Length: 453
Ligand SMILES: Cc1cc2nc3c(=O)[nH]c(=O)nc-3n(C[C@H](O)[C@H](O)[C@H](O)COP(=O)(O)OP(=O)(O)OC[C@H]3O[C@@H](n4cnc5c(N)ncnc54)[C@H](O)[C@@H]3O)c2cc1C
Image (tube, rainbow, N blue to C red; front, top):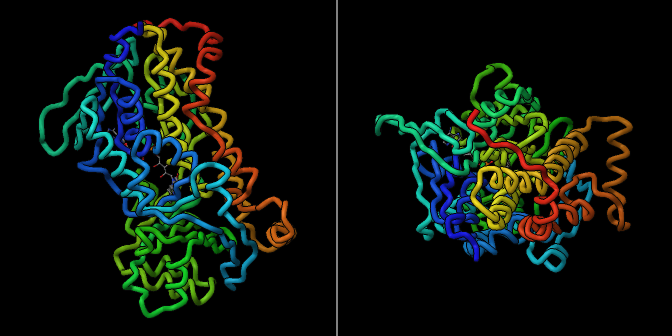
C-alpha cells in the first residue's frame, strides 16, 4: 500500500503564473494534500493579452479538467498566412485544420485571462491548495532537506515570516530570485541575456474597427497572420469569441536599451510604435492607429543561457525560471505547463518521503523536460532570426521556401507552422512520458546526499 504520508508532503510553490498554477492543480489532482502558493501580485497579474494554446498544452489542461472554459472563448485556428509587412503580399500559407485530427486538439488562440483564470478556478476547487497573494518570497534560507523561504506580506500586511516545506517549486518567472540563489550556491554563471528584442502587446476591440471592413475580415477569420520585415514582425489573431483582435509584435529593443533598468515592461508610446512599423503597409498603419493612446504596452524580451541543472536538493525550478523562451514559437506557457505535468507525474511515483528520494524524483522531471525545453528555446530564437532577415540572398532563399509550401512537403521557415516541428512539439504528452519512463530514469540516477549544508 502507498505510504499515506507521501501525499502529505508540504509543497510550496513560488509564483501563481502559468507554471505555478498548473503545478498546484496537477499536484492536487495527483492527490497531494498540502500545497501553498505564494504570489507577489495582488491577483492573477498582467493578463491583458492573447496567447496561443497549442495541443501539447490543451492535452494537459483537459486532463486537469480546466480546458473546456478556455476552449469555449478561444478561436480554433484553420490556417496561417505569412505576409510581407511592407506590401501585405502573402509569402506563404499553411493549412492547420489537420492538427485536431492528428493531435486530438485543434490549435487555438485565446485570452490569457481565460487560461490563467480557468486554472485558478480549478485550483480553488481543491481543498489542498492555499493561495497567499500579495506576498513576496524575499529570499531562501535553505534548499533542504526541508527548504525554508522568507515570505514578506506586501503593503504593510504583516511582518516577514519563515515558511518551511518538504518540496519547493520556484515558478517565479524569468526574474526568479530562487534561480539566482541556486546558481550562486552551485557556482554556476548563467546571466540574463539581452536578446535586443522587445514586444508590443495590443488588443483592439470590435467596436473600434466596426467601420473598417478589411480589419473586420481579419477579426472574423480563423487565421493567424504574421507580417514580417527586417528585424521586426507582427503576429495577430482573434480572441475573446472574436470580439478582440490581438496583436503582438517583435522589434529591436530601443526603449529599454536606452534606459537600462530592472523593468521588463513599460507603457509604450503610440508614436514610437507607429515609427517602428512606419514602412509596413497602409492596412497595418490603420490597424495600429486604432490602438488608444495609453494602451500600448511594451515588453522587453530576455532569456538566459541554458542551465546545467534545474534541481538542487528538494528545490526545483519551473517555467521561465529555467527555460525562458522567445515568443516566436508561441510555446513559453505551454512549456511551463508541461513542466507542471511532469513534476506531478514524477512526484506521484515517489516510493517514500526521504529527501534523497524527492531529489531523485525531481531529477526525473528535469531529465524528461530539460533537453526538450532547450531545443524549443533555441528553435524559437532561430525562427525569429529567419523571420527578421533583411534584403539579401538568405531572405531570397527563405521566400523561395515560403513559396514552395504550395507544392507540399516544403519546410516552413516560420517554425511554429512547420508540420515536422508541430509533430515534435504537439505530439508530446508530458504526463505519459514521465509515467512511462519514471522507473527507468529513477533507477538510473545515483542517490545524492541531501544534507543541511
Ligand atoms: C510577447 C509575448 C508573447 C507570448 N506568447 C505566448 C504564446 O502565444 N504561447 C505561449 O505558450 N507562451 C507565450 N509567451 C510566453 C509565456 O507568457 C511565458 O513563457 C509564461 O508566462 C511563463 O510562465 P511562468 O509561470 O514560468 O512565469 P510567469 O507567468 O511570469 O509567472 C511568474 C509568477 O511569479 C510571480 N513571482 C515572481 N517573483 C516572485 C516572488 N519573489 N515571490 C512571489 N511571487 C513571485 C510573478 O508575479 C508571476 O505571477 C509569450 C511571452 C511574451 C513576452
